[in-house]
Amino acid sequence: MTRHLPVLIPLILLTATLLASLVGLVRYTWAYRLALVAVAADAGVALWGLAEVVDGGTMTYRLGGWLPPIGIEFVLDPLSAFFSAVIASVALVVMVGARSMVVEELPRKEVPFFVTALLMLAGFQGIIVTGDLFNLFVFMEIAALAGYSLVAVGEPASPLASFRYLLVGATGASLYLLGLWFVYNLTGSLNMRDVAAILPGSWDNPALAIGLSLMIVGVGVKMALFPLHGWLPDAYTQAPSATTALMAPIGTKVGAYALIRLLVFVFGGTLVTDELPVADVVMWLSAIGIIYGSVLAIAQRELKRMLAYSSVAQVGFIGLGVGLANPVALIGAVLHVVNHAVMKGALFLVAGIMRARLGHSDIGRIDAAVARRLPWTMAAFTVGALSMIGIPPTAGFFSKWYLASGAVDRGLWIMVLVIMASSLLNAVYFFRVLERAYLRRDDDEPVDAVVRHEARPAMLVPALVLAAGILVLGVFNAVLVNGVLDRIPPAGW
Image (tube, rainbow, N blue to C red):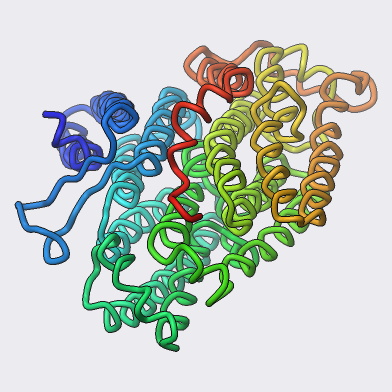
């Protein structure tokens, strides 16, 4: 059974996608129940796989028994096992609260929503476990097509946001595929480990520079790396709350995984740092994105849109850690993946609760009555906000610490200043919300008298669980780093 773990991770979700669409025809509530069970099973298998990798090393599964490079290989190594466990665990918590949001915002659309959500998650997990560069493209498109659909069923403006997302996403996928064609012509292989072994003999070939650049741009779109982020703010703002709560914590992280896999493990070493300084390009674009996203977040008057621009900045931290090209920074980047997934999951769930209870998530209409009527919801928001700013002992502080340490190791003090400036900008737009919720007097603005009590447990508990996770990840970050993340940087990175 253990040797099948790599293929079981996406297979559970793909099978559940088919079954949920069938049982939903009999009774629509069964589709959600099956989806929840499937995601819980997937999380269990992913965590099992992570434990096996930590204990026994990399696991591989060859589909159909065909040996690579001819056959497709699924791989669980420390990087993929960790990402898979994070994606599945955060998705499980969000899915618990998703049904109430779907019922509130998308009545009679439960079956197609949860079937499509399962398909998207299956695509995400496929991206993570595949060891084949073309198979990576296939799973990216599976996840993207499902994502376009989940965005399109939201507010009246959501189809336009989804269409823009589709255009940008399809362009990115096409560029990735074109770049892969150059790499395949050079190496004659699509297997990641095989390509990594062959490439050193082709470093002086111009086709390699073209192929690598196109592939990085393609995954940069999926990651929403600046300046390829244009699809994200509208998609996250206009999508249903359940869609945003599911996509925002984990969608861009899968793109980040693809970037790390390509830059560090496939094209890595001196190729991306000396021969073709792609890592430096990623680093500087990420630094610009950190400041750009933070500044634009300050200008927003709607909570979901503020969090969307904040995501552009936070993705920049991951790209910065990869671009710094040293083990400490890479550990910081991967640590920020799980930290941001938990932080942003909690914050977008809070935004969904506000829309369900207040009828809006407009920052200008928040006052002290909100904190009194939704005390636990605002407590979850406060923990998430403090972590996004980087205040210890929350999780966000420690990933930024590793990133700053990696910048110091490179002698790039300007990147340390970028990290500090971003934290100050984060404080501006998050404390603006907290000030209104806790300090703004009731008589300053009219209070929405419709809302009289806290959100139902099915919506509130997932937000509180993620908020607690922020504190746990912060307090026990050394356990995670020493137990798992130290194993990720390859030799020579």
